Length: 423
Ligand code: BJ8
Image (tube, rainbow, N blue to C red; front, side, top):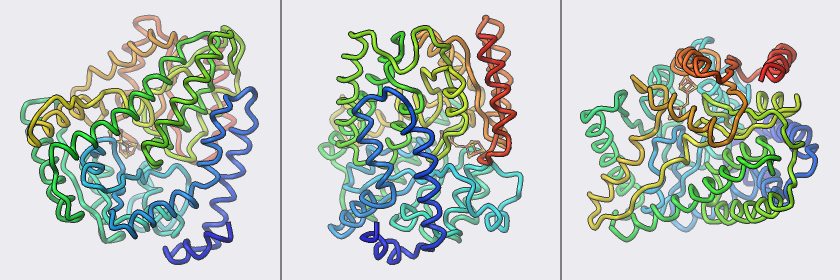
C-alpha cells in the first residue's frame, strides 16, 4: 500500500480521509463477503480486485494515460462503451455507494437529493476518488431531473464534464435524438483521442463489450439452479466491478467462475440450502460499496437470484449487433441496442414491468424486493406500479426506500424477514 501513497498524492487525494475510506471498504468487505461460506474459488479474483480497488487498477489507468490513451468516466449505462473502446480510450464507472462528504455536497445540491448524486459530489469534494482524478473526460447525462440539474454545478467542480442529452420517450424522435447525441459524443471523443472511428475499431469495441455481456448472461442463467451455486452478493459485486475493470480480464474471470459453477450444479452443490427463499432485486443501481440491502436479504436466509437494475441485467442484457458495413450503420446498431434500456426516466415504461416478470419466471424467484434510493422520484413512482402490477399476478413485492446510511438497518431487517416469511 505504501507503494501507492505517492500515486494518490500525485492525484491530489486527501491521504487521511482516503485511508479511512479504504479502511471502511476493507472492513465492510470482510464482514459481508469474506465471511460467506462455500464461495466459489473463482471469487478470489474479485477479492483481489476489491483489495486493489484504488491501487493496481489506478496504476493501470495511469499507465494507459502515459501511453497516450484517454480515461473516460461515466455515471450511466447509456454511455456507449463500444465507442469509447473503439477510440482506444478506457471507460470507468464513477458512481459511488457510500455516504461521504455529504455535508460539503449540500453546499451545491439540496439535502433531499438522492445519495447516488450526493456521493458524486461528496467523493470529489472529500478528495477520495482516484478514478475521478484520473479521468480526461467525465460524461454526465440528462436522465432524471436530479442528475440533469446537479451536473450544472458538477461541471464547475470537476472542470472536464461533457453532458449528453438523452430522450425520455421511446418514440422515433427519441431515437433520432439518441443517434444525434451518440454522433456528437463520438466526435468529441475523436477530437480528444486523435483517433477516428472506423468499421474495424468499432466492430472490435462491439466485440469486446458483447463478450463481457455474454459472460454475464452465462452467469445469470446459472442462478436459475436449485440450490443456487453462487450468492447474490457475489454476483452483485461482479456487476459492480464490470464498470471499471479491464474488460478482457473481467470476461475471462467471469467465464472461469461459470465453469466452476457448472460443475457445482452438476454436483448439486449450492451456497444456500436447496429450496431457500429466492428473491429478485429490482430498482435503482447499487454502486460499490452499497451492499446494505443485499446483505440484509442474504443474512436473513433468502438468496438473491437476479438483479433488475443497471448494476445487473438492465445494464448487460442486450447485445449490440455488429452486422453492418459502415460506421454510420454500426452506430445505428449501437443506438438500437441502447434504446432498449428500460430506465425509469422513460415514460411510459411498461416494458420494464414485463422484464421484471420475465426475470421472476426465469430465475424462479418467490418474490421481488424493489429498491429505491430515497428522493429518487422515477424509481419511487415506478415502485408503486411494479407492486400493483406484480401483486395482481400473485408475485409478492416488498418496496424499500433507503439511502446510504446505516441507521435503518434494524427496521430493514425486520421488514425483509417478515417478507421472507410471506413468500
Ligand atoms: S439508465 S437508472 S444509470 S439514469 S437513483 S441519479 S435516477 S434520482 S441512476 Fe441511472 Fe442511467 Fe437510468 Fe441506469 Fe436519478 Fe434516481 Fe438518483 Fe439515479
